[in-house]
Length: 439
Image 1 (cartoon, rainbow, N blue to C red):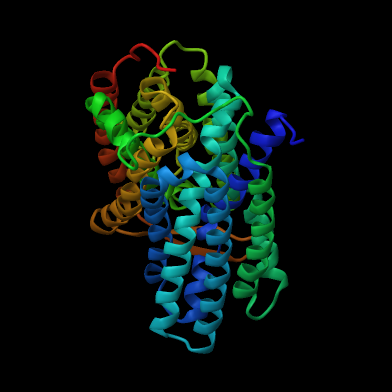
Image 2 (cartoon, helix red, strand yellow):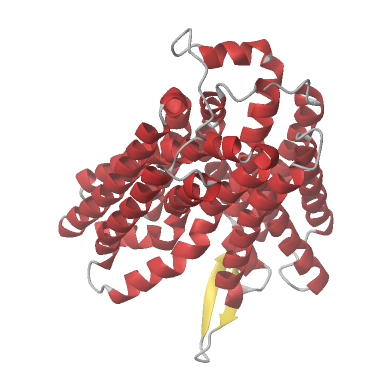
């Protein structure tokens, strides 16, 4: 007889799945290595990550019905696609190393890391969510927050492991790392696939219209859904815009020596926001309240750094430096909390019957934000301000010169605060308060 323990059948498999696919955010660890190894610019290879996030959202949107009907099929698809995409990426990196500048290698990485892994990301992200909410019916936010925190924490866990592999594998370590991790993550996700199961007492309602029911449910409250989609999209866009410039901002304010440590700290806030904000939301009658808190905090933190010109101060004032760090922590926590509260907010408004499909459609916002957030910030930094030299003393007594653009990073905040304000207006008006909860 199969175990009916909620930790074994829901929480552990969810963590195995999400801690595996969440390593997509480790891209910055090895993107320069890939670019150098295959003979392309870093900007050319960056599109692989953007495509991965795009296809994550779009596969979740289009495959949500498969997740709704059969979590075992969807979790197996996730394991196969994610692992094979990772292995394929490794093979094309190897090919690119043997044939520097080969367009075949670059396109192969786009297809494997972007499309194939992207499909695994979307199905893997969705598969455990509804199951968690069914097992933890009284603490839905805590349950989904636990899994989604695994997605956010994956970067902090995997980054040092990946760096150690790159350092120890020698020549060709970059492609060898991908091949090794493909096997490791397939094993983790396959175990998660075998363990994942819905409660024995839950019976899916009979479907009357294939592929149309989720849309029909959304049409019953279209303004609410559009509002949730917009504020979710804007929160991700703002988060990605700032997080993509995070390392350079930290260097700009004079903390070059602890960039790695602060990167891990912000990753902890990202994961903590996913768990903390969702668990906190369980205590409110209206789960939308947590989004109001996230947007207000984000607006205040961004506004303070804008008013004090904390970034352009370049670390000359300790208080202003602290304000910039608080901004990074708040944005990371709010970015994570925005993800973990979406499925439970949707279930409050639309019920559990089609939640995987509805959640999948909502994740299309993530797809478009993945294409716009990073690129928007890069465009602003390239068009506004000028680069200045920042001299940093190294441990061996020598110095290095780092080029930073404080005005460009500060200008990004002017755009993100406007977007946060729009998101807050949508949150207070279009989403509003929860109506009668559906079962």
